[in-house]
Length: 122
Image 1 (cartoon, rainbow, N blue to C red):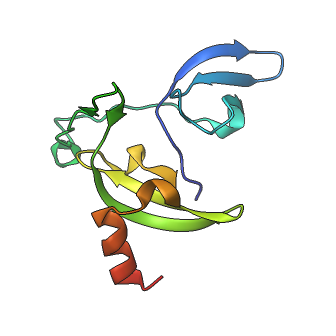
Image 2 (image 1 turned 60 degrees about the vertical axis):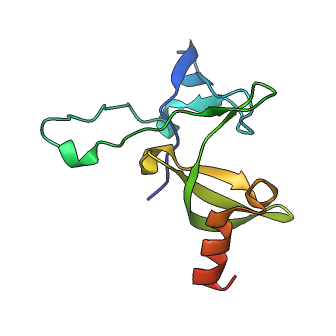
């Protein structure tokens, strides 16, 4: 089953080609144009029926230079990307729908990476 990232707002549509341009985060390394077959509609959680799916979302920390940073809860997976590795990161206070692939260089010297390596032996 493929993994999905998001949700993201649709910035522009091209009905003739069934493609959409998404409003991705500024630092995203993903090309923003997708065919309709690659997208899924967003369904918000029904907090009454599925109250156990609620997460206490921590806001970002603003660094002295104005950048937003989030706390890493854990590393979920790893894969070879080009010449390097990427880790699938679970953010503190967020569910699996917010997991993102991050380059190994960004995970250097993190507790989450130390735990991943200790458990996996990679």
